[in-house]
Image (cartoon, rainbow, N blue to C red; front, side, top):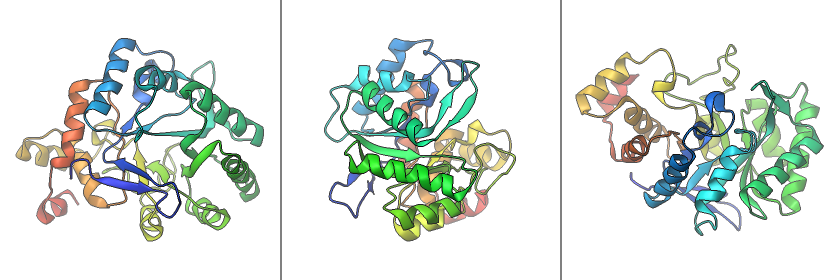
Length: 291
């Protein structure tokens, strides 16, 4: 499965071919995903190594840091390779106390898009995920209409959704084209968890994405980032001689041809392991064992 491609915007005139797995940049920031990394040179080297190893899909946001991962990508990779895909997202910002705050009003969305363009040093964003915990359907539709207007203005090539509910997904596909969906999903987090701030419908949306042939991008997807449910994963990983993280990526890749994992890491060693996970094959019996 190494370097297997998934097409974003397949039904458009400008499709993007992303190789699986991609790379999520959020962990390159400082403590609490805030501020500069402790080892900036190491972060730059890791991003360059990822491209060298065949990764061409990078997930970022102007509120990571804030602005930190965008600037790292630009410093490490600009001018970007022709096939490089940078996916960003809007709908949130960081408070000075490191809090995560909503930032989804029309003018705020425009500001975020402009921030991403400036920080990444590009004139058009290849893929932007719109996320907003709207209080009413009208609020969500207004924000989505703003994003579609920015797309028509040429600032955005493809528009996706982040932290979307089923209702929001259905609203979006009625309003226009949805290029991708980025929700929380993993071996231990497959369905809605109302107690989690990131637990918006993951597994429930995957079948809809498959039906509409829309790539599904899981975040917080590594088994090792979650506190429970690791026993079977560890047992099988030990048997196969791979890491738990590798096994989780392999599990994700075999759940659906439409899943694009974006595991993040600050270690080049772990980066290499994550990419090699695409070579791991799980038998029907092994998948049944994991459940």
